[in-house]
Image 1 (cartoon, rainbow, N blue to C red):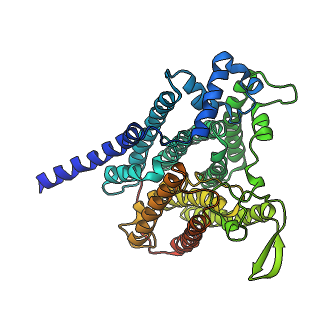
Image 2 (image 1 turned 45 degrees about the vertical axis):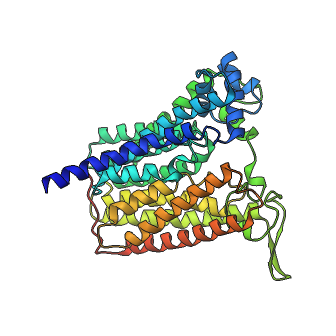
Length: 453
């Protein structure tokens, strides 16, 4: 038995090692498998960065990421030597693969703290899923850095809620959370949906710790100062055009207007009602049965309405769990509240992909890891996040990874209606199912929640 246990131990760490090395292997064996347009943008930014990084938003018209995002993309590329564009692109993606490797280790740490059996094995398994690296290092994008910051927030959340804390420790928690939110804000626009979700999770944790006005106000002030400080420091060191007071204002005002079209090879509910996915989302779209028009909607406005309505409901589900936790007269999140926070973040990311217009093919990047982590924490206990749910999520992540591979190899395009509609149907059904089992999970009084370590 001891020898069998030792073999299982070695197998777990072998899987982790494979997960760490796989992106490097894919990049080495398939050097042309990347998104050339994104890499070309980063290359242009790197050339401007080398000349004068302080004036990046003055001299680079197409530079539309916040500062840390530009630093991690164009700035990092400017420090990499390459005799050709392909060689430069591959070396840059090796650097992104290092970030993916760090994320595998953070997932292992989180699973271990949630007392998931064979945590290392499952961390490696999540790292091996193509949805974990196809849209980041292999693609040539920096979203793995945003994922890294989200994982750090959850590690902070788990650490703080392991036991009762003093007010001084709570203020430290608030400051660190504010810094993480600021770094997320400064990384890339895709993570902004996650910031909103994490902000509500943090607020729920504040109200769980104390409802004394002085504590709530003081912690909020500390968080806001920590949140604003990096932005102010960066803006003071940048040269901007006269009409802008912050580089974030410039990025948001001049960045790409993704929402103005129906879909940019993303799958959402609007792909069922038009044959022109690149058409304007601000024009009325007829909703028909056969040849009969029932009514018309403007996808852009309707998408925002659906997103806000759905996420209002999701927030109420989260706070319902927090109220149950508060009823136990505790100052910390219990383990189920922590896991519901993972679910909430995942569903916010899934919901905006399904409701908003202009979504891209990679925008589901912040969904699968977090929902799978939740399911793993519950899978060996009685409840609704069971092995069937885990199987569906793993299958979905594989299909999504294949979808991204299809896009990089030009098999999936904006005219691939059957593929986009198929992905939309699957994820709409998955979304409805996850909401159902989440509500049942919270209403259940017999659920055995895993503890935090």
